[in-house]
Image 1 (tube, one colour):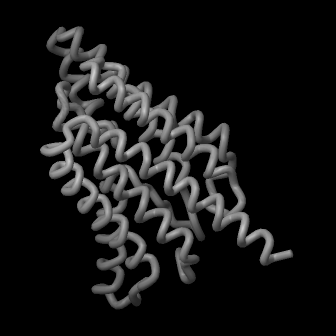
Image 2 (image 1 turned 90 degrees about the vertical axis):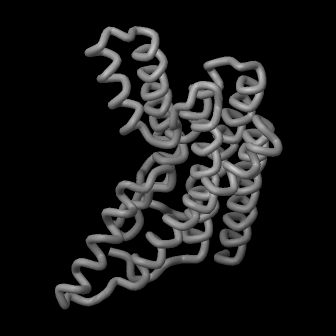
Length: 223
């Protein structure tokens, strides 16, 4: 339950949700038309392909899910504990995500399927990196949990149990940031095509730089 929200958490969540919406939009518009920022729909397609015996589709979608998982594993190894705290190695994780997106950009331009795998791994890494704060789960690459949490928060309010304003503010910010990123991704893809993925890579690199600078400044001010 969130009662107080540090600015670095809401800012980081919004910037990363923007990126997730952006890259997922570009991936959906790509040659393979697969989502990469979440695995629910992709896993469903894989299950359907298994039943129908569409082995190529099963291999492709299965690999996307596996790469999302691998990204999450790498994130856990780098960042460690799921609880959000200033000073953890988020900068290293974001740098690796930026590199994965740069590889995806190169692959998309070549029409190579590994591009979607790199993008999926990047999203898995990002989603696992941002986990919990004050008991509340924070995810930035998909909206299922966020929309559910907003509904639960509003349901409690309508039932007369009070309104968790800070929690609702964070959830709503992530929701609109993801939607905004998806809309921008669609527009940018129309004009820049796969160069949009490079923009996503640079955006994550920018977020990594902001975090490192803010973290160092916060550490020195505490001394």
